[in-house]
Amino acid sequence: MIEVRNLTKKYGDKLAVNNISFKVEKGEILGFLGPNGAGKSTTMNMLTGYISSTSGQVLIDDVDILEEPKKAKANIGYLPEIPPLYVDMTVDGYLNFMYDLKKCKLPRKSHLTDVCNLCKIGDVRHRLIKNLSKGYRQRVGLAMALINNPPVLILDEPTVGLDPNQIIEIRTLIKKLGKRHTVILSSHILPEIQAVCDRIIIINKGQVAADGTADEIAKNITNEHKMTLRIEGPTHTAEDKRVIAEAIRKLKGVKYVRADMEREKGIYDYDVETDGKTDIRRDLNKLCNEKGWNILMLQLSDLTLEDIFLKITMGDGVTVTSSSDAPKLDVSVKDGQLIASEREEAKPEDTAPEEDAADDGDNDGGEE
Amino acid sequence: MGAIYRREMGAFFTSGVAYVFLVVFYFVSGIFFYNYVLTAGVADVSPVFQSMFLVVMFLIPILTMKLLSEEKKNRTDQGLLTAPVGLWEIVLGKYFAALTLFIIAESIVFVYAIILSTLGNVVWQTLFGNYFAMLFLGAAFIAVGLFISSLTENQITAAIVSMVLLFVIYLSEMLVSNFENGNVLQRFLHKVITTIAFYSKYNEFTNGVFSLPSIVFFISVAFLFNFFTVRVLEKRRWS
Image (cartoon, rainbow over all chains, first blue to last red; front, side, top):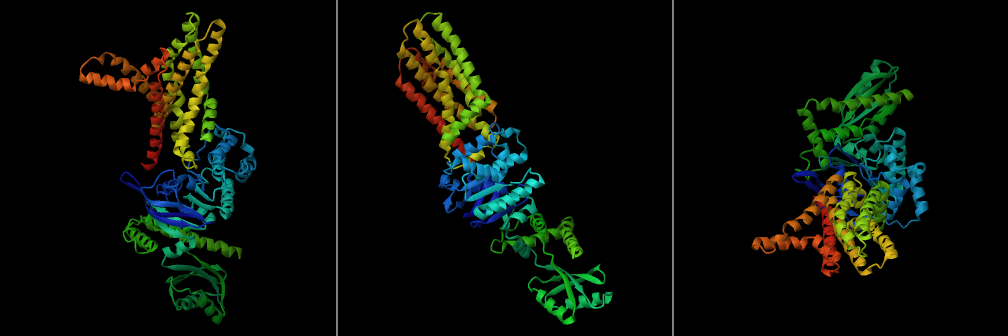
């Protein structure tokens, strides 16, 4: 549906977007993630034909946005970072204007009512846009993007300025829209991306630093593989702890085992690190079966999106393109480690989320 | 184009620009009509048109100042430029909206003509000649104003620069008027400035001559500056 080939944008000497390529399939919800100034909005502006690229190509439904702009733009609904609202118009007047501007052929009254209902702005339709709150303005902008039912929706930080309830509403709406539309959504709010998107592209310094589902990215970015286990031994004493840790340590592919605190009475948690290549879960099950232990909990403590984000964006990713043949993810990991070893302050940030993950484990345990 | 045209027409009236423009235009032209025609006891409206040149020159920038500058400032141009419309449609939609308002203002002369017809015979040929001259003059001025508006984000800057530009062209014509028989350089300057001058071309009509070359000149200026405006919008995407 959307294809981006080697997209580059230079402002004078400054490289805002550097050789970005990706594809978005029909019905996919793609999340654009990146720190401020990473080139998210510039990329989106190029995708929608607002600005041109220095080099590279954008195809919307196989139509080049620069060669046949009208045809390509007809397939896009775009909500820019600042909704392009004429504040001296009423919501209704504005939506009617956009309806005409987009040369929409759908029945006017029912289509606009649908769009307003979808964005929950039915009650402000006769008010002037300048008197609306930020949240309402944002939703009017979204309604504008939805006019004419474009197959592609490009939303630049759609939940900025909304209250938590509205954020959830918008997320649900985007998910719903994702069934019929192809959606690209940018944000620097990680949980939002994680909650809504099928696929994530992390942009840093104008380059694609990672591309895939949250799980895929996490898997690629870490060469270690961590999990937390809670195993019940036969005796419910500290002796169990030693025996079990020892047994797990002997499993193939296990690099490191550490018995953690006593979480339930006489039952301990174990932090296990594998080499990342072997999946030890089946062997582990077998082991426990043989010994008569019970696995009460098994939690893969992979990196959260937040860890990934920090790892990639803290790692500067400068050398990503210099070795373009190598898989990008591995390279940026190497960078991350390199930078982390150079910069001491980078380390606590890297480790902090793991503690969070352990806390999560706690809560789960409590519920059990 | 229709959508943009209708929106701009609406915006002229909601923002009040249209009322200011029409009131000033009607008031000033009314005074001229009363002084030069009614009290002077002539049936020719040409003096009104002649005097209105300066008024139009200062009023039109007010009409055009925010057409594009405001879009850029409020980032509403993002909505226009990512919609399936061409740059020409955007520019011409705005251009014709301003031109329509100008025609509404200018058409007050027909009211004056009716008043005049109750008192004596109206010279309709000169009236129509002047009417079209002013229409095409306005068409050229609006294109210039729209172009200046596309260059800035500040509507006041756009208005002042447009006024100054039009005024300088007007003044330069007076300044070089005795260069006609001077040296080579002076003659060259005179030639250049009279070629681009609006006032003398417009004045031919108020003197009772229907000058087709002048009409062609005004239309050419209008087209050229609209073309420049499109280029400015185009260039902004590429910079």
